[in-house]
Length: 562
Image 1 (cartoon, rainbow, N blue to C red):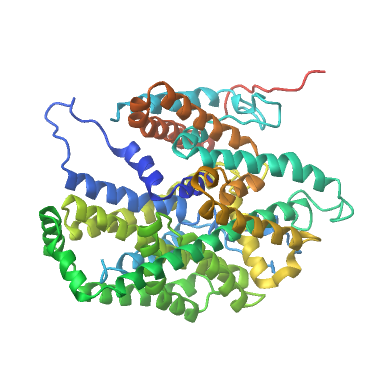
Image 2: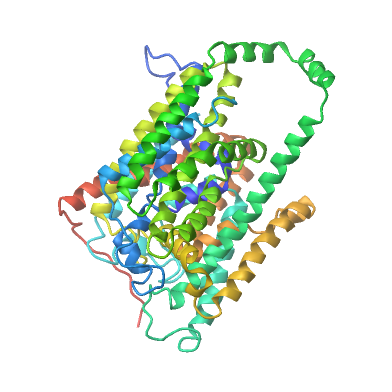
């Protein structure tokens, strides 16, 4: 569930590498099957790209899971602001309804404006390796995942994160490793010595008044600092670009139009020929907004109808800023708009309703601005490939509908078969607790922080801002070595083990490019996608086995020698 956040660090290009590496098939060897045209490929990719963000961005590992009772208890039932009853356990019905209510409106927000066999090979390797490992996991701490390559506490090997490390840049992977060493190698051991001084020795491992509180809020400080800087950066770049365009005179615009290439004129003609009437966007937006204003407060009594109205009134402006900024910087800041909404609405709703209201409106705003930016990205692809924008909209709507149905069903397969959200388990889902703690912080303010945590949070927030400033203003040969604060923050809660896997993936890519750069550039996305998908798809049969109460026949453990 944190994998989507890591891919998100790489922007639109990495996510496309993952999807297209997984769904483009070499069909030349199949008799009677012709390759897709570029227009067909564009529509198919649009449908896939519309579907998968609902899986990793629909809140199943963050704000929606943060509403459940387990996360409520992990935040501390006695924590100020975390009031009794402020939870809603997952349900297929309300989750599908909520996603349908918030996902389609974003499609209409901005309409008025406007080699692969390597995949199959490594998919099979990853799938059958996961299948083989399953036979040796007949207990709590059994199997090859427990193999102590760097000591019993340092490594939990999985091909999923090796594949993810191959897709992510070296900087992201090294930033993860730096964050893991800083937190688990330096800070947490030092802070644990302050037990009884800075925090109560009786605090449980998951209590926000104990060491876990520092882990959670320092992680949040890095995330917010990084998001705050990039949010302002994108807004400033957007405003600067709009201002520069407004300064151009009519003569300059005419000159630009006269110099347009023939190919561009043809693209413009095709794109405008199948244009979507503005009244469709306005009427559809109004209708879907009205449905959401009625449906969402019925699902969550803590969310007032006027919260939804205000969110939908702000959505077009926020969606335009985000879509324009995404086009300029390749950074979709929908998550940060959602975090801002989380704090605002949590504080507005008050102590009794703030946590649930903040989490729900966070998802609402995030999905509105996220989907609209993705659609503009797809329309640009349609323009370049001479694809009908109406076909693109239909493909986007079909993918969104599939995502709203498939994602909750897939989530429940995990939720019922595994211990999702357990900080000591395999499916940690750390962002659920992070988002809930942000909502508590929005309700209670700084009084919710443990002792000395505010000062440390301020320092880490400042570090995140300064690190981004250094990356932007230092010479490129120096700035490219500055770590990414958002990547550093992930191991603070998730743990240090997966950072090794990610760096192994990065090492594989480095050596491959060194030995055969041309072949590596062609096959890395396919191989990485195969590793991720093979390991991931094994989860489906393993979930069915778990639901059927069929346990692995053996348990293989590793213990330190005497």
